[in-house]
Length: 323
Image (cartoon, rainbow, N blue to C red; front, side, top):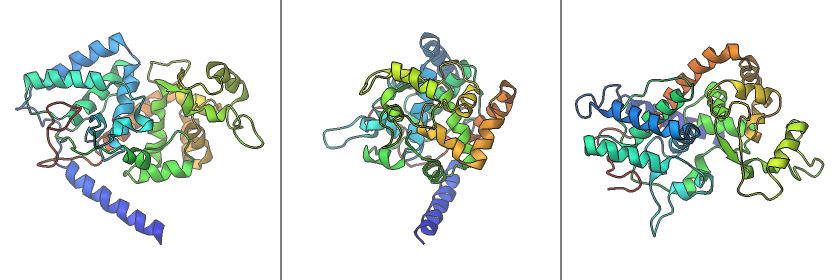
């Protein structure tokens, strides 16, 4: 009964969110900020040329924003003396790209003061950054408003963990109106970027009473990771895709197929018939067009989760604090 009740509640939230998303449009700022796309393109190009790894940083920042309170840029808000904000929750302490988004927001404000939300800027910058590292493009409908609430505890309650099982992942994605295909497709974002050792070191040492190393992890790759991440290493990072770290491609699925996915949540994709099939059919360069098409479609869904529109929220003057 509890599961049925939750599914009904999720259905209500999804319908409500889709109604709000109808207020978004591709040309939302055509009259009020015609230079927006040029500002975004120029600034993002400069950032990615200087540091290609920030493409993954922006993508992770957007994902962490949308899964908590929807895509309202609440992840960018600073904590105050009486409130711990999302960015100070443990999973968000390693987020990157916040200062760059703030800088781009300042440039947009100079051209079009009080018009463009931080939520829309984050969505646009992420798309451009992924394109610049060989990834696909997708449509970004605009008109999001910025949230005024950011609570650290809500991150742990809403964000999928790198330690998640397939059932936990499915539940988390379903709660946001995303299906199993979105789950396996968006997991493909792990083909770029780096991870701290703490997000997967449990797989390398004292994994269980009977296994020192996670048996779902390739043993030779585990030895490589142990050299990169000594026991109790809290600071080092390793590439999620050691072969094409800063190039957006399908190599992630080859790694997962060969039991070389970094996280337990990556390995979990092989525990479900549908997600395993997707992994297997996309573990080849020939599957690149299919994956890129799917990724674009799933991103278009994800970036409209729980959006604020109309008179909801506000247009922040500075992304890190409410007006």
